[in-house]
Image: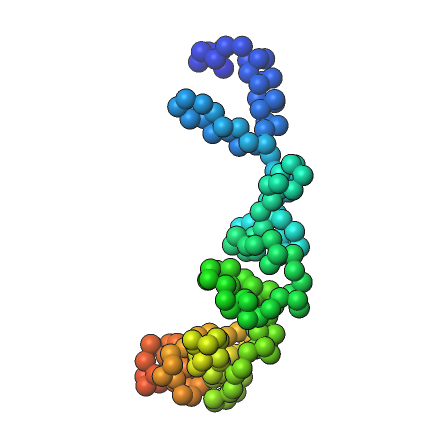
Length: 188
């Protein structure tokens, strides 16, 4: 190191070990921002994630806590409230689409459907075409309910209001056209 002009190596090593105790360091033109390391940092493959507490927190008596599900910023009460105590109507009123998706994932589609007026329009194999009343403004939303074969759980996808049959919904999902028939060997 001294050959390339770095002096005081023992002093630099001391500074390195001392600064490694810090969190993030942001050197700017006129000042440096130094943050402490978080005492809680929980992630999954999608980003920050914790189902029963903060995903990110600092050692400051709960002042700096952030709640995330699958990389999506959430309200503390949505993460900390047990899934059976969440109100499906309030979940559907959530304006943040990603947060709403995570809340629906948390309570499960079956619980959501148990609390919403809906009817089955058509049925074919493991598929159901549903007409769901989401709220006062959206009384006839169409959804295709199916079993995901790889993990054996229900999955629901919104489809065009033109869909009157499961086949229409499958056609619309595949081609964006209810009349262009898609006929797979195995429905997925």
